[in-house]
Image 1 (tube, helix red, strand yellow):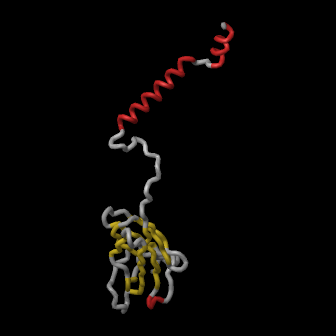
Image 2 (cartoon, one colour; image 1 turned 30 degrees about the horizontal axis):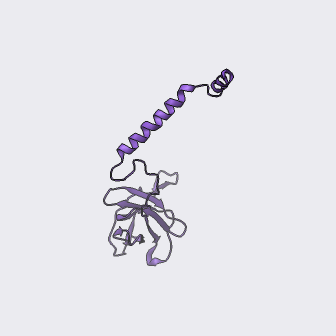
Image 3 (cartoon, rainbow, N blue to C red; image 1 turned 60 degrees about the horizontal axis):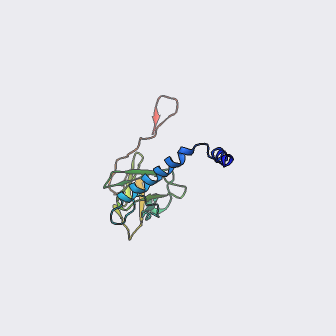
Amino acid sequence: MRPRAIARRAHNPWPGWTAVWWFTVGLLMIGMAAGCRRGVPVVDLGPRPAEAHGTISGTVRGPGNSSSIQGRVVEVVNLDTNERQSVTTNNAGGFTFKVKPGKYRVELTLLEGETILKGPGVMNVNQSDVDAHADFIVGSGKGTGGAAARPRGPAYRMDLGLGQPMA
């Protein structure tokens, strides 16, 4: 009998830790059972419902809807939270935002002398209509008859080295 006891101790070098481990597991189970209310578990590892996202996409074009304008900064503003996102238009003048449901305003950064001839108003992205489309048509401020908008970005100027900046 004696050799068996020695073999058991050699197999379990920390005999007191087994009791501590079971005591900890028991306390955890009691705590979880006490925390349950109306059958709702304390820890829920089940799948969460996916939050619905919508998209706001559009294009930026020149006068007469003729040419796409690439490299422009388009910004979308959530009117409820004032959260802002910005992207740059691609080669086709297109842009896309992934947004949560809500009311949004889409803004375009203009260069000096430009106006927005046609632009979207307030866009409402909700559960039933998760895709919204916003198009801009940009023209020069001279003789277009469109509503004048101030440029939001800096006017880009270059210096020809003669001390006179060129617009």
